[in-house]
Length: 384
Image (cartoon, rainbow, N blue to C red; front, side, top):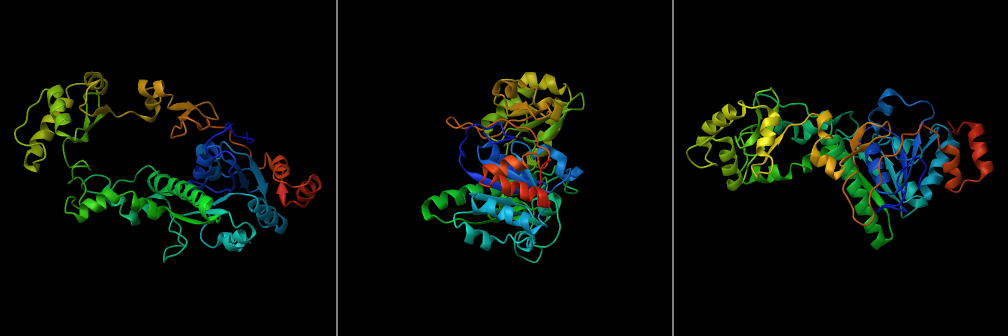
């Protein structure tokens, strides 16, 4: 079991990962790898984390060492750690790793089996590669943001679309694919994971339907974007909402039956949609959200209450599956996913103070005691 982790054995047990500390998607990817059982050590900057670095609980489940990457001995120490690792995860802008003296080509020369996972917004190359950005900007340029929101304007999503779905999880899948490839070729490689690429790829279904003439490039004019009344969100008597996703005809008929409404014409005939929507709006407005949830319980009408963040973890389904577990501070957080039958994932471990594990981790990674003390004395590394 790694220091700072609750993972005793998982599907990635034995895989050594060095993470160069940052914010957002790269730490999330490293957290996923750690909770899959990888031996992840996070390299933090010395000192207390900034408000941005400390936010979000993404430093959990792995130990931290503090290294001054402006100190040549600090860079040499990291390069030595990476020489004995399977994976490096970093989320700097293009060129920063090279300027630090940790260019991937040099690292691969030291360790030809290394997988270098690079997380950026725009990718390692291209006209926008050096630009700053955030989830909303990557979603905008990918076309994904355009597809979200009301008919009048796009709506800013919670920053999970490009950052985590299009970024971190694509980095994780790329790293895992590279490790599998290494098992055949014996060689590592560089994984260039760009959030803008992943955000675009998530819309593969929509782009395919658009090319086939089955999708209109206008929000809320399609079956799957709220344009169809049987795939939308409705207000209830208490001002809360239910989500309806009755796409298949048999589910649609069940929806009509349980709502107690009837409409003329075919479900998928757009000329009937205004009538359907009006009937659904009127019906759902007659009861509270929870009354409707109870009414539809056990049915295949594909109706679910829209739960708040504070409500979700208390839902009986999540409770039965243990979908939420206590986080490092005791508050509920989503359980790591997915679930594996033979090598289960760990539960969230604590968030360390930057540099909390510097001495023990360097010793565990092959540094001698005298070397560690010399690095500490020089300020190249810091023990919290």
